[in-house]
Length: 192
Image (tube, rainbow, N blue to C red; front, side, top):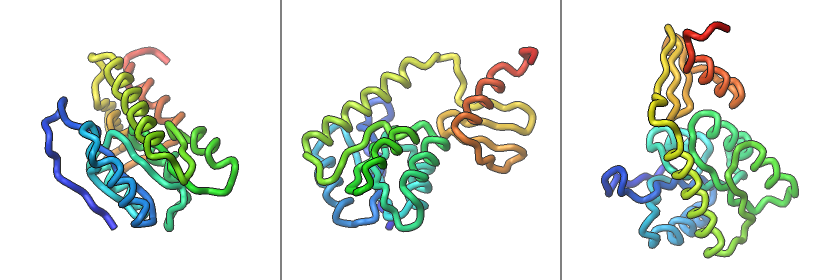
């Protein structure tokens, strides 16, 4: 079930855009209900599957993804790594998993935070604010001269979406391969 809302504030002054990805409708509703009163947050989409989460993230370019790791169509840990490899979006995993190492694995695969269900509402709100603050600061610290897109021949790299195409076809690359490609593409005239 995809659910999205329209943009309401101009860029620069708009609230943090959040996508909620959880296969349980009541969990999505609970998170939405908790986040909507916050003036600095806007839930722009909801996804019940991993595929929907990827599609919404590509289309809506959120500032944060709140996701469970129990998804019906993909392992949430794989989804977390996939989203991080495709785009520069902070991820908070909210999960009721019984597997002790899932929190550690989620963080190692790119999650910015892990919160166990059931969670304290105020704790989650503080974590969301902290992750968005760090993300905003990191984006502000990037050099202004760094372009969003690099193109070297048929190779095109979209840095904001962490998307790489060659001859119009998307390449599936690991995070390490992506960083290496970006580094090389940013200096095409440097001798190897």
